[in-house]
Image 1: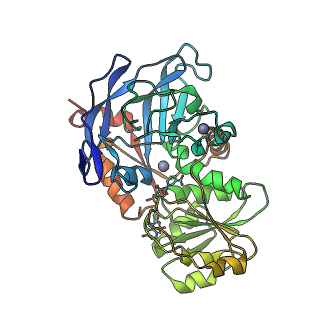
Image 2: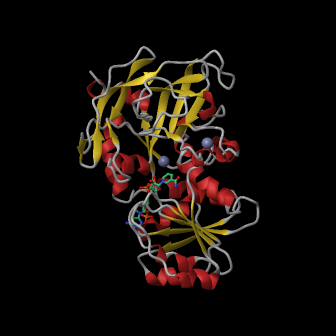
Length: 383
Ligand code: NAP
Ligand code: ZN
Ligand code: ZN
């Protein structure tokens, strides 16, 4: 049944290979979040079961759960920045032991055979990765009912094949770690790919000072670059500079944009809503600079060839990062003490967090759900 652009399902009863677990999700398209039971796979040979500790709230959760990216399947449980503690492992698991802290990002399976998977770029799997939520189970490593869609980390536990689980070093600040799994790697991967992690100092522009933008500023700086924050809100200047930006341009102020023209070697654009990218192109340096589009914006852009030709400018895109790269950025953040600016919330607050993201994330924070605390709220767990 379709409603409000989404597809509503009657979830089948849990199979013998599954168990019922607490989650917080959207029961039907267009509705608000509510506590619910979901079926999670039981542990099989290579699977790692972990109790959830924290889960970040990404703007992609909002796009997906509001059918921005096309019809989503409901009930929908968001969350692809999962951090937990291992409670059970399958007989063939070698990477984890019970008690380890572990994490899962945006996907939980891919073919592992295609040229991109073989290179460690599972996010670009030629056969399509299985997303952590609303994903199709088609590669065989997600257990349980193969006909239902995957459910994300706004939940009390998850069970995932060890190849898609990352290790969290001992001593990491767990309350602040989960956003590295999406926001962190999404910014790290293009910084690396476009040469801003090589030690040669560049000027990196970060557009949109929200969850991704914050991590972008911190990572670009830690990798030895100068950072220009570019925001639609002049109010975010102090905030961006606190996070490590040395330059600030307000995209709503033509004078400010003019003053920063031609400076950036690379711009990572995280804007989450329909916008005109022509505003950012003049900020790029002549001779080969790149604007990397990261926002999940579906409205097409209209760009003239001329500014691109006159300065040999490229417009590109980038999607999260592979498992190896995700582990790399976790380790880098741990080593350098780089953490996202998080605001810890409970599951009952998810709708209000989504509203704040839809309204430009005024405080430039990543909301992180404290799962253990959420489970203590007897009024907001499934009956
Ligand atoms: P967020 O915290 O809501 O931040 C988005 C930022 O975009 C806002 O803080 C705001 O920054 C800016 N913005 C919003 N509306 C705008 C508008 N109309 N015009 C100009 N700027 C606007 O979201 P997020 O979690 O960082 O995610 C950002 C986007 O990246 C989302 O679309 C998400 O789906 C996508 N994403 C992509 C990947 C990937 O792999 N490529 C991974 C994760 C997320 P200012 O107030 O500073 O202007
Ligand atoms: Zn995300
Ligand atoms: Zn593949």
